[in-house]
Length: 119
Image (cartoon, rainbow, N blue to C red; front, side, top):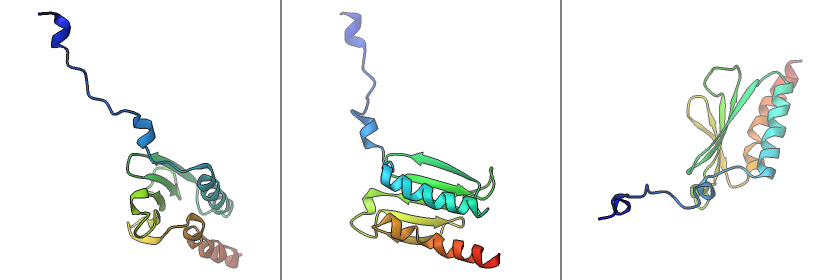
């Protein structure tokens, strides 16, 4: 018996990079625009991106090394139901959910309005 016949190949996913959920350029521009406004207002300081097979997550932090203040999630499996975009607070509660990212990001306009009223 040839030694090659005893080799069992390791199972791999074909095109595993194609299965990863990510934000496209338009979505990322919308998120980073809102992020920049809140950084300029002194509310946010850091962010992190996480992309997996199930979801893409943009987390924002008030201080480095803390738990995220908000998570902006894209879950395509929820697109037919509640909408693929969700804004989740630091306590895990869903603040806003929808089919359109720009409408979901409007939740932060209230925060910006409150910050400008204090000045």
